[in-house]
Every structure is written in C-alpha cells, then in structure tokens.
Image (cartoon, rainbow, N blue to C red; front, side, top):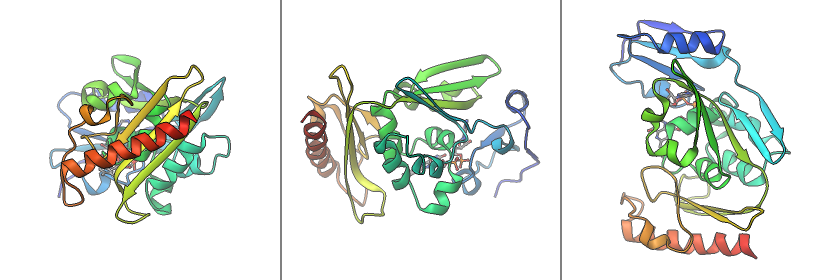
Length: 248
Ligand SMILES: Cc1cc2nc3c(=O)[nH]c(=O)nc-3n(C[C@H](O)[C@H](O)[C@H](O)COP(=O)(O)OP(=O)(O)OC[C@H]3O[C@@H](n4cnc5c(N)ncnc54)[C@H](O)[C@@H]3O)c2cc1C
C-alpha cells in the first residue's frame, strides 16, 4: 500500500502543471479516480486531483466536438448531440457508477486494450490536447496511444477533439453482453469516402487498422478468453461486418 505524503486539489490548470513539474517528487494525476485510486504505484509520493481545475466543457464547432479532459463518460451518454457511436461506446465502458466517475482524460491515459470508447475516438480522427511545463501541444490519438508517457511529458491531457460526421458501425464479441469485449471493431466512413477501422482486444491498446489487411496487420495477445488465432479470426469477421455496414 503506497504511503501518500500529500494530496493536492489545485484550483486551476496552471497550479496543477506547477505541482506536476516539481523535481524530486513522484506525483500521480487523479482524474475521476475510478482506476488509479486502487492501482497507485508504490513509488508515488503525492497526488494531484484535477476535480477543481475545470476542463469540463463540451463544445461543438463545425464538424468537430471537443470534450474537456474532466468530462465524465455519463455526460457523453446523456448528450443527444454527440455521435451515436461515441455515446454507445461510453455506455459500454462500464456500469453507471463507473461512468459517473470516469473521465475522458482518464480513459485516454489509461489506454485499456479493450476500450470501445477509445476505438470510437480512433475512427473519429481524435486529437489529444495536452499541457505541461513545456507548453501545450496536440497529437492524433493513435500516436498518443503508442507512447502515452512519452507523449504526456509529465503533463496533463486537457481535451480530446473528434469528428462528428460520417457513417459509423460497431460490432463486438464478449462472454456476456455486459462484459468487456474479447474483440471489438468500430468503423467510420468520412465525408470524403475514407474508411477508418479500429480494433480492440488485438494489441496492447485499441489500434487503427488498414481495412484491406486486417489479418496481416495484427498479432493479438492470447489470454484465458481467447487464443491469438481465435482473436485474429474474430477480428477479421467483425472488421468485414462493420466496414460493409458503413460502406452500404
Ligand atoms: C482492459 C482494461 C485495462 C485497463 N488498464 C488500465 C491501465 O493499465 N491503467 C489505467 O490507468 N487504467 C486502465 N484501465 C482503466 C480505464 O483506463 C478507466 O476507464 C479510466 O482510467 C477511468 O477514468 P478516470 O477518470 O477515473 O481515471 P483515473 O483512475 O483518475 O486515472 C487513470 C489514469 O489516467 C491518469 N489521468 C487521469 N486523468 C488524466 C489527465 N487529464 N491527464 C493526465 N493523466 C490523467 C491517471 O494518472 C491514471 O494513470 C483499464 C480498463 C480496461 C477496461
């Protein structure tokens, strides 16, 4: 059990960044706390809770939606303007109590390999906005997920933006409807005809995959719910299904 020496609840982003930038203090960020409160690293000295910094704005501009990092998953479920794919994926991420706590920033940084919410963001051309003591920057979600810690540079995710237009579809295979998927697929055809396909349960994080080369592009990890070959076959079948649906 880690022995936390200090708990901080900064009132603004600048203060949060200042606390995280201190040298010699091993600090962890708390978003909604749904995951990290039970999984704190032994080496963590202090926590910086983002509850009071804001970052709760949901804004629409043209064909983009921007979600502040502290927007709760349940807020997205209840937003009738939000894309249906995103709302459904937010709903599937966990039970009601979890969705009221878990935040967009926490899910993005948590990078769970079976997160259908992350798959929905990937096909929606999501960009992750970050701020650290070095300044602010933005990265495509796919690149961010390849190296979460390296992308963050000790800073904070402040927002995620995504496209709201296009045909979308999703499909999943799980042990039960409420369970995390073994493999899941999401697809979106953008207005220019480009098809985006994302898969969960086939790599360390959800990934974007070339719709024309699904089997060749993945090397799924095996676990008690499915062998690598089983996941590869299911992924190819689900991918075909969702790509056909968005193209028709
Ligand atoms: C199969 C599976 C595997 C998972 N594996 C992991 C895992 O390995 N690690 C993990 O953290 N979660 C994991 N999760 C949990 C998932 O990411 C949660 O949905 C999410 O973390 C809950 O959001 P929260 O706001 O409560 O996050 P919290 O529990 O508050 O934080 C989660 C992580 O994100 C960081 N964080 C939160 N908000 C921000 C922010 N705005 N800027 C920078 N960092 C932030 C925290 O420091 C922590 O590392 C997994 C989920 C699934 C389904």
